[in-house]
Length: 69
Image (tube, rainbow, N blue to C red):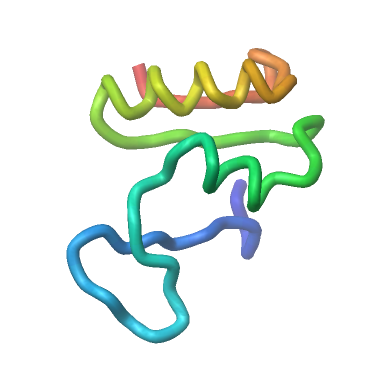
């Protein structure tokens, strides 16, 4: 499903070649150039809700956002 179209982000340790930090609205606005694509969101419930909200505010279709329920 994802092939090579994903970004690994580290939050506990810094490692060369990986983004370090939390995913937030600023980060998503910096990275996402096309909101008319599929998004797969996984993580703790509050994180998933937060990211889904941000994606929707950015104009992503709820039909294109896949997440664990």
